[in-house]
Structure formats: structure tokens, C-alpha cells
Amino acid sequence: MAYVLGQVSYSIPEEMAKGSVVGNIANDLGLDLKRLKSGKARVYTGGGAEYIGLNKDRGVLLIQERIDREALCGETTPCALHFQLILENPMELHQLKILIQDQNDNPPQVLYPVQTGGSVVAEMVPRSADVGYLVTKVVAVDVDSGQNAWLSYKLQKATDRALFEVGLQNGEIRTIRQVSDKDAVKQRLTVIVEDNGQPSRSATVIVNVAVADSFPEVLSEFTDFPHDKEYNDNLTFYLVLALAVVSFLFITCLVVIISVRIYRWRQSRILYQSNLPVIPYYPPRYSDTLGTGTLQHVYNYEVCRTTDSRKSDCKFGRAGSQNVLIMDPSSTGTMQRIQSEKSILDEPDSPLEVGYLGAHL
Image (cartoon, rainbow, N blue to C red; front, side, top):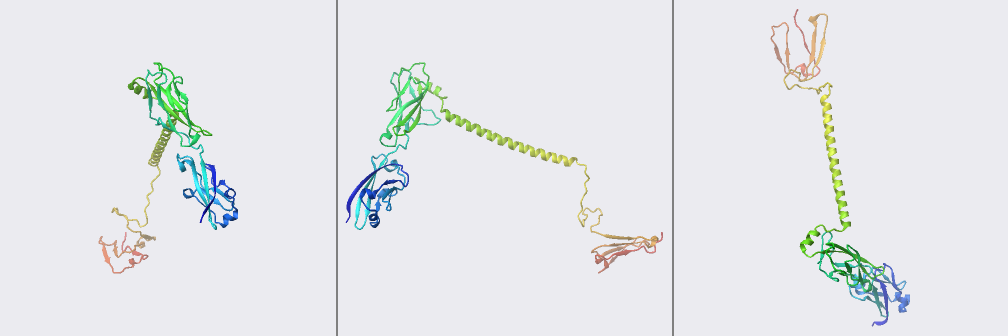
């Protein structure tokens, strides 16, 4: 049977660092460290198990994860975590309560007027408006709680500060004098929304106001309504930068292409105007395919000459041929063709001797 013997409560700020000490549970409940170990002390945290842990060696509660009050409790106040410290032999239960204090960690959020970037949203004020005319109301919220969520509104800049004012607590923008025909059609107001935290956080909202009696007049004037200067300056800078980069790349590619074409043209001109002789190259065993009479194979010649021209002879070798033509100078011009099954001409290095027989000059 379990008995509830003690109860303790702690109050901590949100966003405490991991490992921070919540409190010394052993001292606050009058428990000995040996009792925590022998009783197998543990903390039952239910839905908040990931946030709080027990160190039995030191007898303290520790932060295991950062606690965001808004994520944990939303708009519910107060925000608290409930735990039980459980010991065995004998069974004991101790109730624990941890209050989460809000910290000013969120700035105000502007709901109206909606900030639309480059587009223009303007409130219209007739020129017949009296003092105290309600132009519009700035609406903002803060998700923090308590005094951290108390908001105040201040007019930071205006085209004509003598024409408009902003309610400190309610954010209402009203006229503080009679509108005249001399007032500019385009009016621009900058409103600062601050919370009451320490240190305070703020948000800025731009309110465009048109002083005119008809919509066509507003439309004609607001086609060139000044946008946020910083936004326009940044946009112009990036556009100019992009244009410069593209132009540089285009010019670089153009120069490279022209340089390559000029180089190739000059090389072709140099080769064309050169007067160097052209020496043809004929590979070994060159064959004449055009029928000009050039020998189709390589031939070896050996010429022997003596003082007696009748004894002069000529030796030549021809590789791989079985057809031999023999010309007798003493004959009347008839050629004899000798066909042999096997001739010494079949030998690659065997010469054939042709002599002039009985020829007398």
C-alpha cells in the first residue's frame, strides 16, 4: 500500500539549459541519499517525462530538455508540470509540482495591416475628415503571457506628423487636425509595436494612407507609391549584379570564339603560302594500280661489264614467278615463253642469266 508522505513545489523559468538543477529533492523531502538508492527512487512524470530527470547520487532534479512554455501550455496559465517521486520497500509517493515561468522570448506579431511586400495597401481618408477621424487600427498579438504580452504602439515616422497620431494602448490611428486641400495624397506612417518584457521586443508595421475624395484620384496617385526603400535598393543591386555577370560571360565566350577562328585562319594561310618542296613517300613494296608501268614488286639487279661488249651480261632476280621470258638478240624479234613446273626462279635469291648469243655489232 502506497502512502503520500510529502509534497514539494518548484518554480523555474522556461528555456533553462539542459542539465540545470531544478531543486534538491532529497533535502526538501527530508530523504537520505541511501534511501533513494535502496528504495530504487524514480520520478514518474507522465506526459513530461522528457523534461525532468532524477540524479540519485546527488538527490537533485535536473532539466533533461529545454522547456518552451508556449509549446507546452499554449495560452493556458499557469503552466505547470506534475510529477511523483516513487520509492519501494516500503512504497512511498511524494507529489512534485513545477511551475514554468514565462520568459519574453517572442516578439509581437502584426495581424493588420497585412504586410504584402511590394504591393500597396492603403487606407483612404476623405479631405472632409474632421479631427479624431479613425483612419485604421493596428492589430498585433504576443504569444508570451503576463506582462510580457502587454503591447504598446508608437508612431515612429510619418509623412506629416502633425496630421496623425497612434493610440498608445489600442493602436488606433486617428487624425489630430482638420484635413486640408494642401495635404499630400500619399501619406506613409511607420508604427512600432513593443511588448512589456525585460528586455522588450518589438515589431514594425508600415501603414499607407491616401488622402482623397474619390477612388480614381487614389488610383492615379498610387501607381507610383513609394515602396520600401531598402527592398527596392536590394532588388536593384541584385539585378545589376546579374546583368553584369551575364554580360561578362557573353563577352568572354565571344572573344574566345573569335580568337580560335583567327588562329585557325592564320595557320591555314601559313601552310598555303609555304614554298617548301613536297617529297612524296612511297611505302615498301609499292604497287602501281594506275597501269603506268611501274614495277609491282621489288627487284634486285646486278650488272657486270667487260672490255668485250659481247661478253657483257646482266643478272637479275625476281621473286616468286614461274613465267620467264627469254629474248635472243640474234633472233628476228620472236619471244619464246618457257613454262616450267619448277624453276630456279622459285628460289627467292636465285638469279637468272640472260646473255647475248652470237650477236655482233
